[in-house]
Structures are given as C-alpha cells and as structure tokens.
Amino acid sequence: MGLKKVGILTGGGDCSGLNAVIRAVTRSAIIEHGARVVGIEGGFEGLVFNHTQDLTIKSTRDILTLGGTILGTTNKGNPFEWREQSHDGSISVYDYSDRAVQTVKELELDCLFVVGGEGTLEIGYKFQKKGVQVIGIPKTIDNDLDKTDYTFGYQTAVQVACDALDRLATTGRSHQRVMILEVMGRTAGWIALEAGIAGGAHIILIPEIPYNIESVVQKIRLRAKGGSPYSIIMVAEGAKAIGGDVVTQETATTRLQGVPQLGGIGFHLANQIKEQIDLEVRCTVLGHIQRGGTPTAFDRVLGTRLGSYAVQAAADGKFGTMVALQTPDIILVPLHELAGVVRHVPVDSQLIKCAESIGINMGREAA
Figure 1: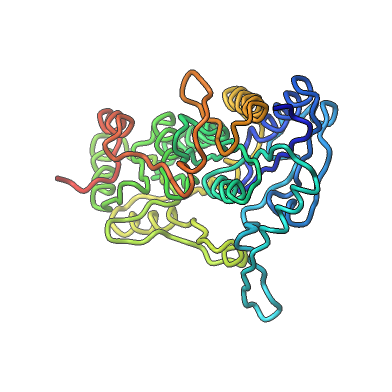
Figure 2 (figure 1 turned 30 degrees about the vertical axis):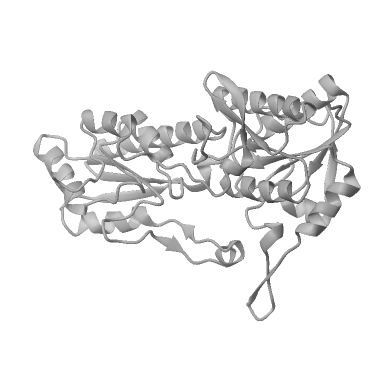
C-alpha cells in the first residue's frame, strides 16, 4: 500500500534516543514514500485532545543528539483509563478511547507509530483492536520488553549509571565508606546488573533475587577483613529483602498514574547496614539523570534503524506489530504477544552467573 499520511507519538517516561526515532520515521516516510508526518503531542493525550504538529525534514534536522522527545510525553494519559482528580481529591476514571480514535480518523492517518514501553504498547494494541492501524516501536530504559534484544534508551541509561558508579567508587575508597547507588528499572534489574558489572560493584541487588541482609553485611565484613574497608553497592529501585516489600513513595502523581512510584530502597538498605556494621554508609539516588541527556551511539543507531524499519512495515501493510532487534536484524513481532508482558532477568541467567563468578554478591541467601 502507499503511505500518504502517518502519525507518531511517544508515551511513558522519556529516554535518550526518542528523537532519533522521530527523525528516522519522519525522514524515511518523506524521502521513501512522499508521505506527510504528524507528531502527536504529549503521548496519547494528544490523541484525546487533538494536539498535533507537522513534522518535516527541516523541523527534525538537528534532533538526533537531543535527549527527551520534541513531541512531549506522559505516563498518566491512558485513554482507556483516564484518571482525573476532583477538587475534593477523589479520582474519577473515564474511557476516552473513542475520542482518540475519532482524532485518528479526522487526521486521516494510514498508520500510527506508537513509541513506548510495555504499558504504552499495550495501549497501542488496544487501539489496534479498535481499528487503528498501529505499529509499535520499543522504548524503555528498563530493557524489560519481551521479543527484542534491547530497547533504545537502555544502553545510555547503563552508561550513565556506570559513570556515576565510577565516581562514587573514588569517594568510597578515599573515605573507606560503603557507597550505595540506587538506579531505576522498576521490577526488572537489567540496569543495575549491567551497570554494576561494568562499574565494578561489589554487591548488586535486583528485584528478581530478594536479598538477604546478612549475606550483604557478610560481604562488606569480608572485604574489610581482607584489607578493603570500603564497598560499592548497586541496588535497583524494585529490589527488596527476603520476606519484605518494595519501597514506594506516595505522591499526587502516583494517584493519577494508578501505579506505585518506586524509590527509597537505597536509604532503607543503608539503614539496615548501619545497624550491623561500624562503617559510614552513604546513598545516592541517580533518579531521572538516567533518562536525560545525549544518547549513546548505540541508541542513536538502534533508534534510527527501528524508526526506518517501522515505516517500511507500514508501507507493506504489516500493522499490529512491533519492530524489534534480534541481533543483527530488525524484525517484526505481533503486538498481541507483548501486551502486558514484562521481561525480567532470569535468576539462572549467564549474566548473573558471570557476576557471581567474579565475586560479586547478589544478595542470595547462603546455601
């Protein structure tokens, strides 16, 4: 089929590489197919309220190295479960999906490119079932999407976390302290695991392996006894102790999003360690620093490849799919196989075995 007009939106949290995708979709659609490209502003909110902008080769000319997304995004604008807060503080939920579908019809889009993580792509799949021609493009720093080797944004987040760990290590060594770095990832430990290995962490705690605090403290004591009275700990925000719960923060946005906001495990872990060992313990929460800034070369190339291939898939009429990296190729996978699926780190993975083989403590309970 011929492409005349396509739309693209970015949903969920921002990350490095989004603008590379927007640029690639725009350039490929215009250069290869002579199509018009419409940017949907603010994620799915732009569909609900018909907020758009025209995208051209000129308007996307200098965005390849720019972090974030020029279209804006949100992680609380699900048209199927639109949450609004009343003056009395109560939350009401509405279904605005038909309004979004009407916007797609009014724009006369041949295809809607939905760029996002697991939640955003699940919404995209629901729109596909309502008759919107959708192609998904995988984005998340968490790297927790199934059917793709990597999501763009992940490698940049890992590099940022690794750089932070390098800096914390020099302070920890100088002051003989236990330095804790808390990173993002929600319920998946990919960032903590890879950045921890790359940054030489002595202890890595991830959601997939509930940690035993005695094992963690024992590792710190053994290092001190062996002449290294400092330790570097990488902890994922979704990590929890054996028999414990994840640490969350109650905020106004949490209620509007309808999901708990993780964060605080680093300070909780620091307090646990302080109770058992006579060393100074410091915690740094990296937070949104992982999301921002210039994307690495890997994420620029991956975002460009995914965007370009998505346009070709649309031209071929292969809707209801997501473009995915299965090294070395970009392929298509059905959206229905991804809806609601989160890819966690397998506890018996080669990556974890590698970490433990070089002496990294993963918080496992002693056998």
